[in-house]
Length: 194
Image (tube, rainbow, N blue to C red):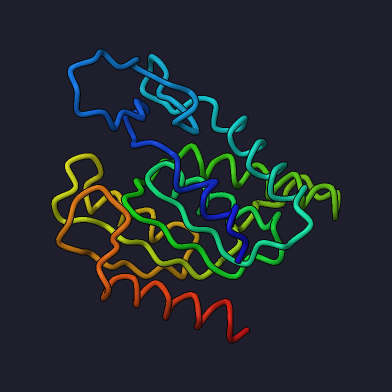
C-alpha cells in the first residue's frame, strides 16, 4: 500500500466543505477548496465532482507504484469509493473509509467514467456500466454530528461488497486498538493474501 494513497485521501474535509479544525473564534471561510473534493451548488447538488475525480485519477495513474488500497476520511472516503468503482485503478484490491457520507453525484460520475472506458474498449453506446466491485470497509461513528450512520450505510451498499462497522465515537478515523486491528485484518485479507 502506498503511503501517499492514504495521506492523499485522509486530508479531505467534512461534508460541509469548511475544512475547519480550529477551536478559536477566528472567522473561517465558508468553503476552502483545499479541504474539499467538491461543494454543493445553489440547488443542493454537489459540483466539481468530475474535476475532483480527474485530479485523483491523474495523480494515482501517474505513480510508478500501483495502488492496492485506498484509505479515505469524510469526502475523501466517498472519493476513494467512487474512484475504486470506476475500475480505472486495476491494481486496487480494497477501500477503507471513515466518517464518509453517500454522495450520489460521485457515483454518477464513476458510472460516466466506466461508460467512457466501455465505449473506448467496445464502441457500444448502449452499455449501461456496472460499477466495479472492490472489497470495502466503512467505519461510521454513532456520535458523528456531521455524517449520520445511515448515510455511511448507503455508501457501504454502493458498489457492492461493503462491510460496515459502527463505533461509539464521532467524526474521525478511529485509532483505538480494536478498530485498528479490524482495519489491519481487512487489509490483510484483501491485499496481502491476494
